[in-house]
Image 1: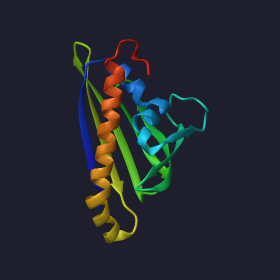
Image 2: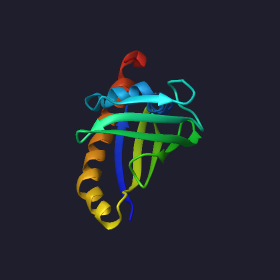
Image 3: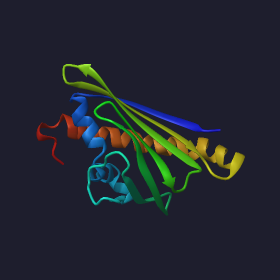
Image 4: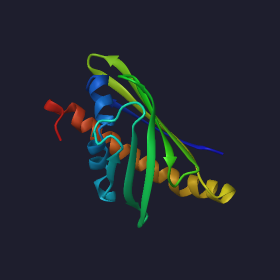
Length: 156
């Protein structure tokens, strides 16, 4: 059975600004600096778009992980979806939604659905360990994007 993780953030910036920051692989890596995450794209560009693949390498739980995802849907500035094409999960789908609240404000929703490997045992581990851990990472990332988006010039 899949596990769903959802994080909602209110950001005082326009949806396009937030959307672009979410697709910047350097912003992504900076948001989880404690894991020493790096990101490599198939195009060499740091800003992802439809069809791009990105491989993340990081250390989580003391173990080196590698995951490749593809941008499967891209509807600027309201939504994009990335899916794991290779990595630790049986399946992973991450939907990013950006709702325009008016007055330069955005509701950003991260909805990640994972299926753990190793059958029922993997599902139990996912719910007990992975889901809380991934939720913390999504919250950290959202807070980082919020800080950047709300800062004049949106610089890092």
